[in-house]
Length: 389
Image (tube, rainbow, N blue to C red; front, top):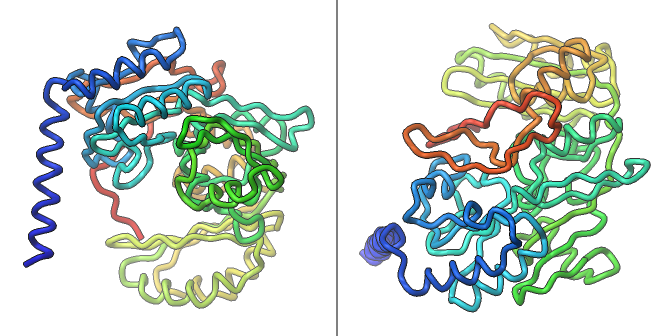
């Protein structure tokens, strides 16, 4: 009974707070908005503040997963110099501050009810060093934008799959990726971070400056508001790729064989098993290896012997080819030109990279793609529910 009462009280409080936020702004929200306006630089100020009474509020408060949250105010920053004053605005007016870089949290915690959401998706610069061994990136840069702008250098960052994930939030939870068995997590490649603290001050942290904070923010959660990151880049060699598909009847056997086999392979082999309602598939990336070497380890798995199994193994794959694989747009490597054209349609993202919500007025401004002279990427689809293991 107590648990039920608590759940009921929580649901009621969310309902009440949602109704209040959706209503006309009260004195506290008005004071917060006034403070936020003063914190912003003189560029598109009206466009960069979204209140609950505005038609774009639903779009601005929603993420990649359509789970409703009702923030008090949403502010889009365009400079790291705006973040500290905005944090102080929240504190002075009794509001928690919610940082948002890519809006990919599966329960939309990047736009929490009753908070001041500070969106950094337009703090998205990508600045490689002269020899491209390091890159300094705004925390709102999406992974696809970083990959796209680093491609001409021949180097990349050790990063994840989804091109519309924002760097700040991605690093805040560690940075899982499809090269991590041999390159480690994305946070293992951070050289330094510029962070806004709870008092609004901006500090640079590294292994020698504020080392305790440097340790905590690399995957430890929200110990500071990340506004900029300098990362060591990596050189990913041409690789061999495998795609395998299993029918519903073969899923159980394929799952057991995969679990018995995958983690015991050469760390340069990274793979993923996806279980769906009526089939399963395996994707694998063998970095720096050949078709023959990949075929040998796949044959040792027994997966090819599962009834109904289908598979393709291709080699000499560019990194763009390999990244396309993880977005399920190809099942074998193509020539580099074809792979690049596909890569651009997936990764050359704009700051407001999510697809419009049907029937809702969209929110966007300053949407220049990462490579302005190339076609912009297809907007990332939103979903009400994702069910994948």
